[in-house]
Image (tube, rainbow, N blue to C red; front, side):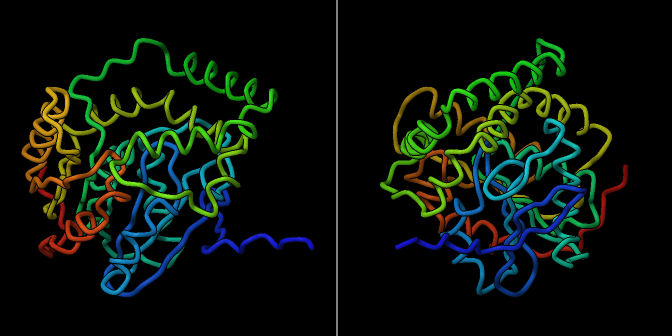
Length: 294
């Protein structure tokens, strides 16, 4: 008996020429959830379920990830910030939205707020990436070409099919303190060369996106919207872990936001502590998203 494939929960919509998987559910003010490096829409399932009674929750897969088609060009900060705006357009939401960015997507969420101030109603950074003084060592074109070549070589050798789901499982275990079973869509996605290439290119462009944000900040102030910085804490007393909390606290101070801790939780806070993420969104005080004077 042939098993029918599970139907995708969202819709494929063409955004800037790229078919993207976008899932919108719930009702109320809009809230966009964007995951970290290599993550997919289903990583937010628990958070979305908590927010949907109060918010219109919008999730999407960046190019090459989840169920989205790949992009012909490597990721860049402004491109990803603009993509959030285009995703909102694609689901018919033209007004301000709260944007939640996890890890690498914290760069994207902050850049969105700075570049599209009238479309941002609030900003929630979930264990967001931090680079106080980014200085990429290689030219972007060199690093991305090398990364694309590596991904092509690994895909031709069948590595994604053989090891992709296992690598994904190891990543989840390393980034959580709880036990989280595989998602039904996990194996289908992470065994493809498409997803491998997207992950490798996101990793390769990480330092350049950090540097882009550092350049963007002085000339593009945040709009006067509430900001929350939620940091993961696994309960350990290591110097590295405590230092990470202090860096997250400093980020909150720099952005004029509220700092809170999700504990016990690993880096994948949305899996270990979805209630903390939902609460950070729902607790944002509503204000008019007008840009500050420059």
